[in-house]
Length: 357
Image 1 (cartoon, helix red, strand yellow):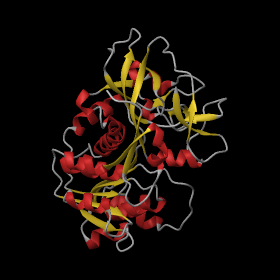
Image 2 (cartoon, rainbow, N blue to C red):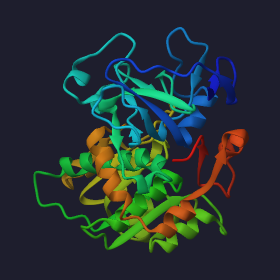
Image 3 (tube, rainbow, N blue to C red):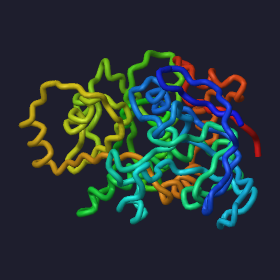
């Protein structure tokens, strides 16, 4: 079968041939439909994030996948089920307490493998196998865009963490700021817009000039675009208002510190970006004072698990069709896979198609 991989010492994805996998006991064989491409894939290809499976000279890419079961292999799944795989798996050293407690998304760095990212091959291949407990059934109607379920699940997890941090009192957020106007940021903005709790004001921060398709999406959602070159994060309250909820999806280290200044009293910021090392000066006294005197919170969130994927399938139905059309700017066949990795000002979200239902 064909697969898309990055090889050791290289910085570009290539198509390789691999044997079609055979499912072990408890695993199902899945025929891949589509696999999304995101910023993590680019970081893995560039060597800035992730790592190869032990003893392998290549890593099959892809962690945002949707497929159809072709061999249930005596699992609870059925042939023809449309499924999306979760990403976390036990590390090469074996299982640990987080997997034994069915909480792999809470395992710290070094105590897990992530398919297509670190320590385990991903889903950018014509077929893949997976233990059935890591496969989430989705409605057949979501098969076309099922690769979006994984990134939606990431935000489901982050919001769960944010609300948990405010559970000691009655927290009813009405304003929110998304840092980053990439595909994850836009998905999150659309999710907040569709939230049953109802946000009165939404903002999205980026660094792009008009005309720009992401700005068009932001404003079509009824949100306000904030250009960080004109209004840095810490100046958002004076330019607009303090934020009850901030979602950081940039990986820009200063945003973690600046978010505290941008929060309204009792607000919480969820950090999802994974930055490189960067030392800079911080007014630690002001940071500490804001956290204490105004009951603010910062939470870190990474990965997601089955319940978040299941929640994502429900959230998916609430997203406007026009938004999904505008968000996915390209679905490319395997023969033209390079186009899915191109990144320019017209690209928001791309995917590679391996097959159809």
